[in-house]
Length: 472
Image (tube, rainbow, N blue to C red; front, side, top):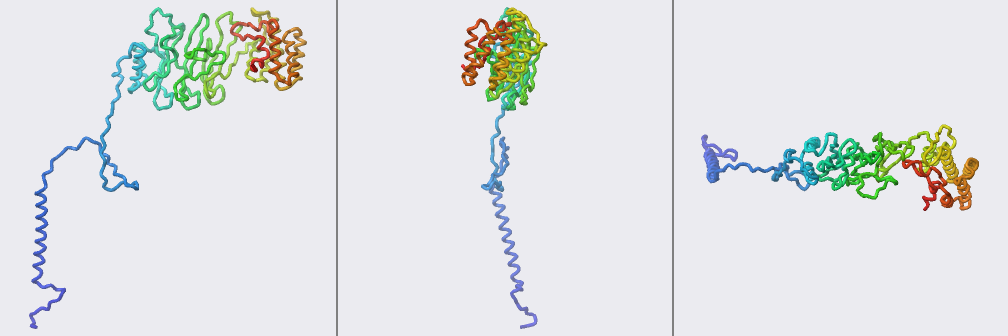
């Protein structure tokens, strides 16, 4: 080997191989660029299209594990069509007839009209007067208000109609719900011209279900006496209806009777918890009658409360006038309520209270009325101890009767009561049946107490020993 020769190794490529590598890389780059150019030339030119008028759900599609899949294709949903509610102006004026008015009110309730605006339209078209009830309240708890409306429904009747006797006007009370009249006080075919249109007294939860009841009142007058009539309208069990249960002596045959709560010459009405059950009650006071034949009267207060099924009369509280015969009625009422200790105290005060006043009435003199009042109280004081088996106390009052009114039929009835009670194993109802049969054979054993005026109770033979009636 000469000094100018170079030794070749694997790590040192020869100078003749390097240009070949460069040439290969250059040819590869040119080929790549040529392919890209050809593809661009072959691709058609894009045409611009406006986006569709659709709503795009951008929420990624979920995988089976509940996690949104990366790169999921969004779903497309057509936007819903929204109907714009009609405005009050679209309604037009209310029709002139009741059926048309009902349809119109239903249409109005489907709009966004406010009840104040509604009633302004009704007043402008003579369907309401300024003082009439106009309220929106959710009675049934569905989140939508019912309309509580007093309406002048008799306005189209002939002008020679009798008209209302009190301040106010004839008419009706409607409850409009879900586009329909769901309650009305009166029959449209038989409007009452002698009564005022019902108005709203108060809205309050009398049933304790969290939903308000609507208490209404209207007034009417007869020949000499005016009455208030109250109704309680509720959706307690779903259906909007009246929920008043009539008092026993006020049950009426007609199913469409406007109300079961009535009281003459009401001088006070209020809504408060009078029973202590944390629920509001209706409390009304009055009860006098404007007629001389009604007798020597006294007013009363009535409490009407929810009993779990209906609004019923819970209590009557009579004015204590200081008259002896009125005190006897108070004692009888306590007896009927089975408040026997209270009754016994009142009966005894009838006999022993020197401050009580005696009266004269068409049915008897002062002396006659007092004597029969004392006899009735003495008999009840004889009977009450037998309810608890106390023959000693019963005998004491029987003896008082024998000393004070020896010849009275009721005194003999007291003696018969004790003997029959002992003979029949302390069976008081059985003893009372015998006593009642005996007294019914006597001539007017209760004397003037049978008629102290028609607004006072009438006490007759079968009232003396009441267990006889309850056992029949």
